[in-house]
Image 1 (cartoon, rainbow, N blue to C red):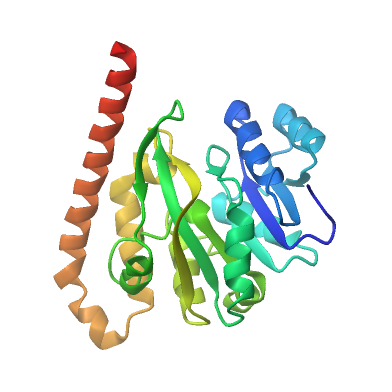
Image 2: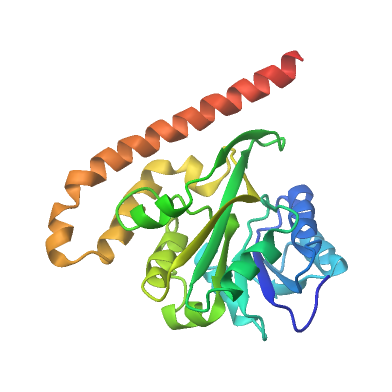
Amino acid sequence: MPDKTADVVVIVPTLGERVDTLGASLASALGQDDVRVRVVVVVPESATTARVMAGDMGATVVDDPGRGLSAAVNAGLDSVEEERYYAWLNDDDFLAPGALAALRDMLDNDPDASVAFGACTYIDPEGRPIGVSRAGDVATRILGWGPDLVPQPSALHRLAHVRRAGRYDETLRYAMDLDMLLRLRRLGPFLSTKRVVSSFRWHPESLTVANRRHSLAESEMVKHRYLSRRTRRLAPLWDLPVRLATHVAARQVNRKASKVALAHATS
């Protein structure tokens, strides 16, 4: 249940266009057990239906400043009260039961850690499971040069470290979460669990799926920011293989999603 002295604030940026999945996303956050949680929905003033629904469900409603996704998340962070941890949940993703309590306990047990994250189930537009991402500690080790395998809806961030890291970069359109993770990694270790703590919806409207080429280019640029000058000169040696591997992985997920849809249609 929401609580003014919540341990965790969950920020849900939305344009208010996916009211059906938004309601389910909010319910997955507000229904978390064994943790005090406050949900902040950042939504345009014009999205009346979404604003009313979020308020009726018990969420705090914040106006979207209209400058993109990074600015929306920053607006949500500006509304933080006394919470210690923060999660970012998109309006068509879901938290698994008990997810926030499990991740909070991990951060409570390691006061130096910046982020705790778990596994993530990929689901298709109808909510059917496609596969599970369980990169674990490997995701942290390759974050600075390889693909970003830290599932955004599966991550819980220590707010004290987020404040030290600074605001989300509003010049970025795709890799703002990667940029923040790379800053947070400098402030403390990342903790991981193989437990599935969220579901990520894979569909054509997902920002980084529909625009993968631009997303990859921006991700490479962000990773280069945090490399030494000498290492940056060597980055092309691994940028192309990582890019190709990411394309292959995306195609595999798309094929699996098609198979799941076909199996459902013929069953």
